Image (cartoon, rainbow, N blue to C red):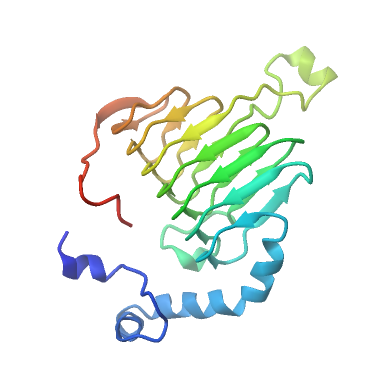
Length: 228
Protein backbone atom coordinates (compact mmCIF):
# COMPACT_ATOMS: atom_id res chain seq x y z
CA UNK A 1 0.00 0.00 0.00
CA UNK A 2 1.47 3.35 -0.98
CA UNK A 3 1.81 6.24 1.42
CA UNK A 4 -0.69 8.21 -0.65
CA UNK A 5 -3.29 5.47 -0.47
CA UNK A 6 -2.68 4.88 3.20
CA UNK A 7 -3.06 8.55 4.10
CA UNK A 8 -6.50 8.62 2.46
CA UNK A 9 -7.92 6.38 5.18
CA UNK A 10 -6.02 7.65 8.22
CA UNK A 11 -7.89 9.59 10.89
CA UNK A 12 -6.40 13.11 11.03
CA UNK A 13 -4.66 14.03 14.25
CA UNK A 14 -6.68 17.27 14.43
CA UNK A 15 -10.10 18.29 13.19
CA UNK A 16 -8.60 21.69 12.34
CA UNK A 17 -6.13 20.61 9.67
CA UNK A 18 -5.66 20.58 5.91
CA UNK A 19 -5.98 16.79 5.91
CA UNK A 20 -9.35 17.02 7.67
CA UNK A 21 -10.62 19.44 5.03
CA UNK A 22 -9.34 17.23 2.22
CA UNK A 23 -11.08 14.17 3.63
CA UNK A 24 -14.30 16.11 4.21
CA UNK A 25 -14.35 17.15 0.57
CA UNK A 26 -13.59 13.65 -0.76
CA UNK A 27 -15.68 11.68 1.77
CA UNK A 28 -18.34 13.96 3.31
CA UNK A 29 -19.79 11.14 5.40
CA UNK A 30 -16.55 11.07 7.42
CA UNK A 31 -17.04 14.71 8.34
CA UNK A 32 -20.61 13.91 9.36
CA UNK A 33 -19.38 11.05 11.56
CA UNK A 34 -16.91 13.34 13.32
CA UNK A 35 -19.59 15.99 13.93
CA UNK A 36 -21.92 13.36 15.43
CA UNK A 37 -19.05 12.05 17.57
CA UNK A 38 -18.43 15.49 19.04
CA UNK A 39 -22.12 16.14 19.66
CA UNK A 40 -22.53 13.00 21.77
CA UNK A 41 -19.45 13.64 23.94
CA UNK A 42 -21.48 14.63 27.05
CA UNK A 43 -23.54 11.43 26.75
CA UNK A 44 -20.39 9.44 26.00
CA UNK A 45 -18.72 10.56 29.24
CA UNK A 46 -21.85 9.54 31.14
CA UNK A 47 -22.07 6.16 29.39
CA UNK A 48 -18.42 5.37 30.26
CA UNK A 49 -18.90 6.01 33.96
CA UNK A 50 -17.79 3.11 36.11
CA UNK A 51 -15.22 1.77 33.66
CA UNK A 52 -11.54 2.65 33.31
CA UNK A 53 -10.72 4.18 29.92
CA UNK A 54 -7.40 5.63 28.74
CA UNK A 55 -7.01 8.91 26.88
CA UNK A 56 -7.73 9.43 23.20
CA UNK A 57 -10.89 7.32 22.91
CA UNK A 58 -13.43 7.86 20.12
CA UNK A 59 -17.05 6.77 20.23
CA UNK A 60 -19.07 6.79 17.02
CA UNK A 61 -22.49 6.22 18.50
CA UNK A 62 -23.05 5.17 22.09
CA UNK A 63 -22.04 1.65 23.15
CA UNK A 64 -24.12 -0.51 25.44
CA UNK A 65 -22.35 -1.03 28.78
CA UNK A 66 -23.61 -3.81 31.06
CA UNK A 67 -21.23 -3.92 34.02
CA UNK A 68 -21.82 -5.95 37.14
CA UNK A 69 -20.99 -3.59 39.99
CA UNK A 70 -18.54 -6.08 41.46
CA UNK A 71 -16.68 -6.57 38.16
CA UNK A 72 -14.09 -4.55 36.28
CA UNK A 73 -13.89 -3.19 32.73
CA UNK A 74 -10.61 -1.54 31.77
CA UNK A 75 -9.77 -0.13 28.31
CA UNK A 76 -6.40 1.33 27.31
CA UNK A 77 -5.56 4.44 25.30
CA UNK A 78 -6.90 5.21 21.83
CA UNK A 79 -10.00 3.00 21.82
CA UNK A 80 -12.18 3.38 18.72
CA UNK A 81 -15.70 1.98 19.15
CA UNK A 82 -18.16 2.27 16.25
CA UNK A 83 -21.79 1.69 17.19
CA UNK A 84 -23.64 3.76 14.61
CA UNK A 85 -24.67 2.15 11.28
CA UNK A 86 -23.26 5.21 9.53
CA UNK A 87 -19.85 4.86 11.16
CA UNK A 88 -18.70 1.89 9.05
CA UNK A 89 -19.76 0.78 5.56
CA UNK A 90 -20.15 -2.79 6.87
CA UNK A 91 -22.96 -1.52 9.12
CA UNK A 92 -23.00 -2.79 12.73
CA UNK A 93 -26.10 -4.84 13.51
CA UNK A 94 -26.27 -3.21 16.93
CA UNK A 95 -24.14 -0.93 19.09
CA UNK A 96 -20.92 -2.23 20.61
CA UNK A 97 -21.82 -4.24 23.72
CA UNK A 98 -19.39 -4.56 26.63
CA UNK A 99 -20.82 -6.86 29.28
CA UNK A 100 -19.54 -8.28 32.57
CA UNK A 101 -22.20 -10.44 34.18
CA UNK A 102 -20.79 -11.95 37.34
CA UNK A 103 -18.98 -10.72 40.46
CA UNK A 104 -15.25 -10.66 39.90
CA UNK A 105 -15.46 -10.72 36.09
CA UNK A 106 -12.49 -8.98 34.45
CA UNK A 107 -12.71 -7.48 30.94
CA UNK A 108 -9.32 -5.95 30.11
CA UNK A 109 -8.50 -4.31 26.77
CA UNK A 110 -5.13 -2.83 25.72
CA UNK A 111 -4.23 0.29 23.75
CA UNK A 112 -5.42 1.19 20.23
CA UNK A 113 -8.38 -1.17 20.29
CA UNK A 114 -10.90 -1.01 17.45
CA UNK A 115 -14.39 -2.53 17.28
CA UNK A 116 -17.47 -2.06 15.10
CA UNK A 117 -20.69 -3.37 16.57
CA UNK A 118 -20.40 -6.85 18.04
CA UNK A 119 -20.17 -7.97 21.66
CA UNK A 120 -17.67 -8.76 24.38
CA UNK A 121 -19.42 -10.83 27.03
CA UNK A 122 -17.39 -11.71 30.11
CA UNK A 123 -18.46 -13.94 32.99
CA UNK A 124 -14.92 -14.77 34.16
CA UNK A 125 -12.04 -13.11 32.25
CA UNK A 126 -11.41 -11.72 28.78
CA UNK A 127 -7.94 -10.25 28.22
CA UNK A 128 -7.18 -8.38 24.98
CA UNK A 129 -3.75 -6.99 24.10
CA UNK A 130 -2.65 -3.87 22.24
CA UNK A 131 -3.61 -2.98 18.65
CA UNK A 132 -6.34 -5.58 18.42
CA UNK A 133 -9.12 -4.91 15.90
CA UNK A 134 -12.48 -6.60 15.66
CA UNK A 135 -14.32 -6.51 12.35
CA UNK A 136 -17.99 -5.60 12.15
CA UNK A 137 -20.30 -7.64 14.40
CA UNK A 138 -17.59 -9.96 15.77
CA UNK A 139 -18.33 -11.59 19.13
CA UNK A 140 -16.03 -12.74 21.95
CA UNK A 141 -17.49 -14.71 24.86
CA UNK A 142 -15.97 -16.61 27.78
CA UNK A 143 -19.17 -18.47 28.69
CA UNK A 144 -21.65 -20.98 27.30
CA UNK A 145 -24.45 -18.79 28.76
CA UNK A 146 -26.52 -21.90 29.64
CA UNK A 147 -25.66 -25.46 30.77
CA UNK A 148 -25.39 -27.95 27.92
CA UNK A 149 -27.08 -30.68 29.93
CA UNK A 150 -30.89 -30.32 29.60
CA UNK A 151 -31.57 -31.33 33.20
CA UNK A 152 -29.10 -28.72 34.46
CA UNK A 153 -30.79 -26.10 32.27
CA UNK A 154 -34.08 -26.83 34.02
CA UNK A 155 -32.57 -26.66 37.49
CA UNK A 156 -30.07 -23.82 37.05
CA UNK A 157 -30.43 -22.21 33.59
CA UNK A 158 -27.70 -19.62 34.13
CA UNK A 159 -25.05 -21.89 35.66
CA UNK A 160 -22.97 -22.14 32.49
CA UNK A 161 -19.39 -23.29 32.03
CA UNK A 162 -16.83 -20.49 31.66
CA UNK A 163 -13.14 -20.31 30.71
CA UNK A 164 -10.87 -17.29 30.21
CA UNK A 165 -10.22 -15.89 26.74
CA UNK A 166 -6.81 -14.36 25.96
CA UNK A 167 -6.05 -12.40 22.79
CA UNK A 168 -2.46 -11.22 22.35
CA UNK A 169 -1.15 -8.07 20.66
CA UNK A 170 -1.73 -7.20 16.97
CA UNK A 171 -4.53 -9.70 16.38
CA UNK A 172 -7.10 -8.99 13.68
CA UNK A 173 -10.50 -10.66 13.94
CA UNK A 174 -12.66 -10.53 10.82
CA UNK A 175 -16.30 -9.51 10.60
CA UNK A 176 -18.96 -11.76 12.21
CA UNK A 177 -16.29 -14.06 13.69
CA UNK A 178 -17.16 -15.82 16.96
CA UNK A 179 -14.48 -16.48 19.60
CA UNK A 180 -15.61 -19.05 22.17
CA UNK A 181 -14.65 -19.65 25.79
CA UNK A 182 -11.18 -20.88 26.73
CA UNK A 183 -9.49 -19.74 23.51
CA UNK A 184 -6.00 -18.21 23.36
CA UNK A 185 -5.10 -16.32 20.18
CA UNK A 186 -1.39 -15.68 19.69
CA UNK A 187 0.23 -12.38 18.72
CA UNK A 188 -0.22 -11.23 15.14
CA UNK A 189 -2.80 -13.88 14.26
CA UNK A 190 -5.67 -13.25 11.82
CA UNK A 191 -9.14 -14.75 12.19
CA UNK A 192 -11.07 -14.90 8.93
CA UNK A 193 -14.53 -13.39 8.51
CA UNK A 194 -17.33 -15.61 9.76
CA UNK A 195 -15.02 -18.03 11.55
CA UNK A 196 -15.96 -19.89 14.73
CA UNK A 197 -12.87 -20.24 16.92
CA UNK A 198 -13.14 -22.97 19.55
CA UNK A 199 -9.45 -23.84 20.02
CA UNK A 200 -6.16 -21.98 20.45
CA UNK A 201 -4.65 -20.09 17.51
CA UNK A 202 -0.83 -20.03 17.17
CA UNK A 203 0.98 -16.68 16.91
CA UNK A 204 1.06 -15.34 13.36
CA UNK A 205 -1.42 -17.91 12.02
CA UNK A 206 -4.36 -17.21 9.71
CA UNK A 207 -7.39 -19.28 10.63
CA UNK A 208 -10.76 -19.57 8.91
CA UNK A 209 -13.87 -21.73 8.86
CA UNK A 210 -16.23 -23.45 11.29
CA UNK A 211 -14.52 -24.78 13.27
CA UNK A 212 -11.59 -22.50 12.44
CA UNK A 213 -8.49 -24.20 11.03
CA UNK A 214 -5.04 -22.84 10.19
CA UNK A 215 -5.04 -21.88 6.49
CA UNK A 216 -1.93 -19.72 6.24
CA UNK A 217 0.58 -17.45 7.91
CA UNK A 218 0.15 -13.71 8.41
CA UNK A 219 2.72 -11.35 6.93
CA UNK A 220 4.77 -9.62 9.63
CA UNK A 221 6.48 -6.26 9.24
CA UNK A 222 9.47 -6.08 11.60
CA UNK A 223 9.53 -2.28 11.78
CA UNK A 224 5.85 -1.46 11.88
CA UNK A 225 2.87 -2.87 13.83
CA UNK A 226 -0.33 -3.73 12.00
CA UNK A 227 -1.86 -0.50 10.81
CA UNK A 228 -5.50 0.31 10.35
